[in-house]
Image 1 (cartoon, rainbow, N blue to C red):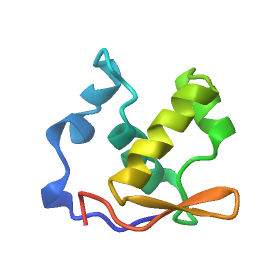
Image 2 (image 1 turned 120 degrees about the vertical axis):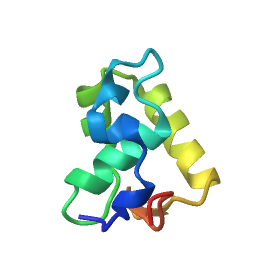
Image 3 (image 1 turned 90 degrees about the horizontal axis):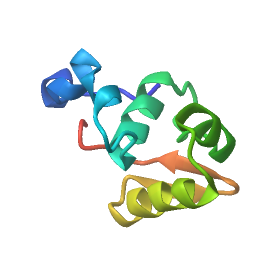
Image 4 (image 1 turned 45 degrees about the vertical axis):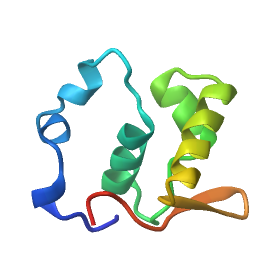
Length: 88
């Protein structure tokens, strides 16, 4: 589990309202949920994202590409390691 600064977490995540918004899941939604739920510091696997969010492989690739471009994750073998977050 990644340690997050609770003062930096947006209200949308604290209240859970993010799950009801029309553009859910955003890349930051996936990053936040991975930080909270992943015990090994990795982003959810592609299969878990596909199953959990009902998105296809292209949707998963868009999310991971955006998070890589933002510098939040990096590819580690066939997984994505979380290296920083907006909530550090």
